[in-house]
Length: 191
Image 1: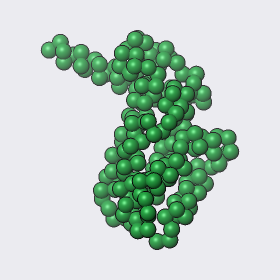
Image 2: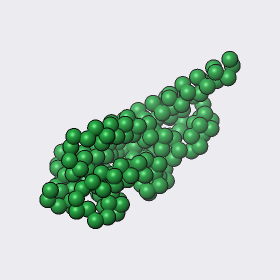
Image 3: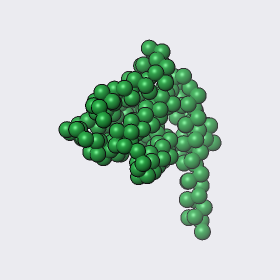
Image 4: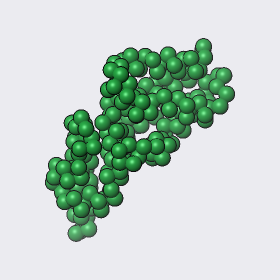
């Protein structure tokens, strides 16, 4: 019985840490300023709990990103599985969902880059996005190399580019989404 209580406490602590980190990164205009001490205090746990559970700042940020992505990935997969739209529409919807995630989470994604997670290709979620997009591109007539095309299209929505366009260049999110849709249409050709 004692082991069950410890698991419940560990789960509660994990959820509290993820929620606290998520809230602090979302509220901060400078994600670099959010410390592990700040997160531990907001979660009501000791700093050691953070390091035991997540390893380091990069591990914690990766876990927060994964927790935010999980519901989006489920929704995207359900939409892809439901069909009812053309392959081109599925590609556009998938990339639009990924872009919206990056727009909404640019502080968190910036924190990931600052924590040493700068290569999107090493992030755990990148393979899922790539595989899902490649599968949709395999259905689009005229796409020569779906694997490369998936990588190239995902490069257009790198977090650092999205943050630069929105925060530095003051591009409106809707304008960015429209530009991405037009670019996808150019890449995939008429159809």
